[in-house]
Picture 1 (cartoon, rainbow, N blue to C red):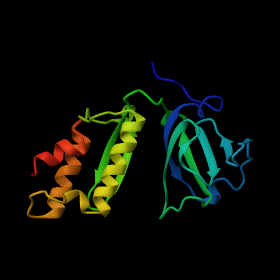
Picture 2 (spheres, one colour; picture 1 turned 60 degrees about the vertical axis):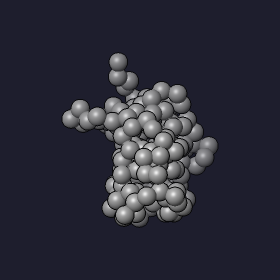
Picture 3 (cartoon, rainbow, N blue to C red; picture 1 turned 180 degrees about the vertical axis):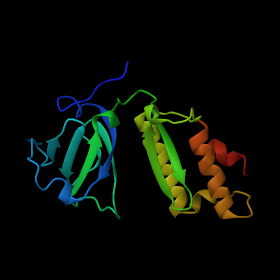
Picture 4 (tube, one colour; picture 1 turned 120 degrees about the horizontal axis):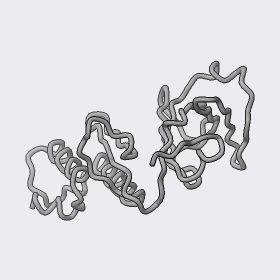
Length: 180
């Protein structure tokens, strides 16, 4: 059963990818709600705008921001999400998968309900997903993980290990054993 989200329940255990918009989109709209943390919300029939300086883990939600330009946390940003962009989440269900762009070194997670074309992915709970993302980010910025491994090209090795991390349930130690 798909949940229908609206102004009464979007803020409770949801995952959403918000798209940044320009201030012109909301300049004539009325703020409908202001949270304790200072975020402001404007409700529409199809979705909502959020004006906030914090994104990512928001209370019990996972809200990612797709910025128009380079994003800096703590900068106030206006973003929009359709009601249909919200998906149910919790801490224990295996509902997240990871995608990596190795050329830009971007690592992001997605809700399994957003899968297209019957993609085959490994799904994890929120804690496992966060752990794998941290490992991948470390692999991008530091080469100490490659000490004692046999390889010809560090970039090729990095890509192979990251691919295994996101496409299997093996941990980094098990993956590295193949390169000893």
